[in-house]
View 1: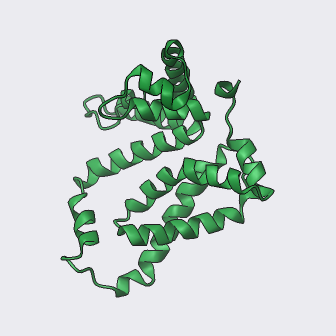
View 2 (view 1 turned 120 degrees about the vertical axis):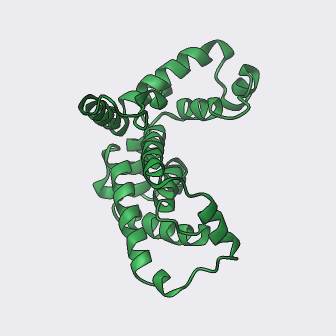
Length: 211
């Protein structure tokens, strides 16, 4: 069944063989993760797009070595960080920011308290990586359930094809699969170790937010 099989391995193999539809699906799944990583470097939307395009171009040349889906999120995060730093160390540093530029204002307004923003961004990236590995209907369902306002079961059925009576069980399977994905599991285990070593710590690593 589709809900029991991760599609990423097949998509990577097909894209490596030149299947444009498979490549488009990979981009759709991992674009949110890629953009989230790049935005941590406080680039403008146009700069973010430039860096993202560079990462996608590099990925095309590495598809053959990424047959294991577990390698995809890590490769994207590492490459996105490297390319963003390279961008910052080259041309952008020669271009002063205009405080009246709407793009610069949007970035400035989006800044959180540094430490809390870092943990929030890390948690967000972990969730995006886990979601990208889910089967299509499970991923679509979880994203719909995060919408505000949350759509009704009738709307969810119309948009995903999941029968109303199967939405609850599908959600449970999707969350379980999300929690067991390599990056989410590693994050939760790291958070639990941190909490054990800092009993009086706050909730910045709250593993409950992952499920």
